[in-house]
Length: 496
Image (cartoon, rainbow, N blue to C red; front, side):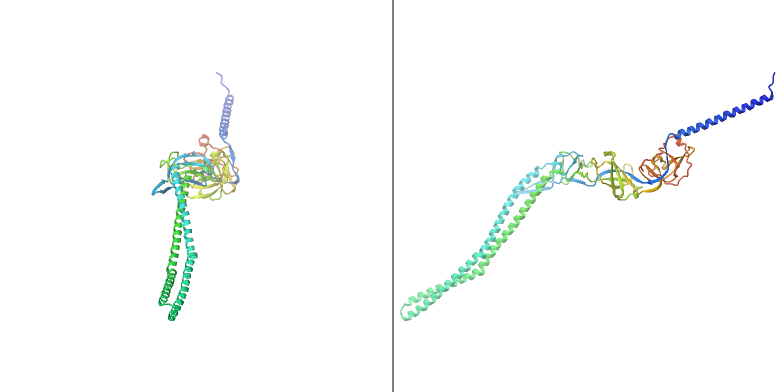
């Protein structure tokens, strides 16, 4: 049996050790290359962006609904009207039947017909009232004539008859006095002639008798004249003035009566006109349905006085009622500029500004979230904008200069905290909690947790196993949970 030399065995041992070391080096190099390739493959799933300083124009986002700045409630304006004729009262009770109605959602112009009500009862009362007005007009004319006659009668008496009667009395008295003077002369003459024997005593007696008759007639004329001046003339004047007063009272009554009949005629004409309901201004027709009371506007239904029939929003003056979350309400003040996008009119942006913010919260019963209603007045109203449309409101905040900002897609909410994934020079990832400030539609301010020049991952996916294994090596911030925290991990929305 041949034995190998000792030196040969040593060479084999050294060669084996060398081969083993070479194999270990190759294996280690393969593992390193495999790990490096795996890490590079993980980073290839994402895009990255740098943390930069910039001027930020932050905004607040809120959902809302389009409303009209002026919304007119159109009611049934019929009234209960009664008309008396021949001692009987006829009435229309302030109700009617809806004969026709414009379809809901119709855009109308001022003066367009919205609905037609049955006007037959009011038209019949109108015809009766027209006859009453004609009678009232005739009675009024008769009263005017009677007053004119009464006034003419008093003028006739005071300026004509009274003077003529006084002159007649005065003339008769003067004539009687003249006759009495002649009679006195005749009596004296007869006495002288009788004393001389030229005439008999019977002639003297005859002259004395005639004298006494003339004295009596004069006395009667004077008495009648005094009676006329003291009683007859004042009485007649008062009677005639009383007739004038009575005629004036009658005329006043007839004037009021005629005015009342004309007012009632105008009321009935207005009621007939109200049976045709027209749009008071341009707008958008909405039925005043009330499901709780089972009231649905349709042709054939009965309507009553003061019943709401339509809502007519004015489409030329529109606003958006924005639902602002209570956590940011203190940042919204009137006069802030706003940009509004409405789903129903495409991608067009409407300019506006905040006019007011409600001081009281409103509870959304579907989500149990409280919010404040902010009114945004639209400065231009595009065609097709209608009340009730959903809107997204972007309220511009004051400018922030030279702040750290990253795209909002780089932020993810993890159990209520804002985090991002920072890329290091050796391509390793770090899960880091950050503290956020103001936001815009595309960028978000970072107030703590990042430095300028660092790279962060865009659109991190929370269910990616590569991200799940990334540990948090940064500082744990004593920050409050993110606004509206959620119970699951996921990327933050583009607008906060």
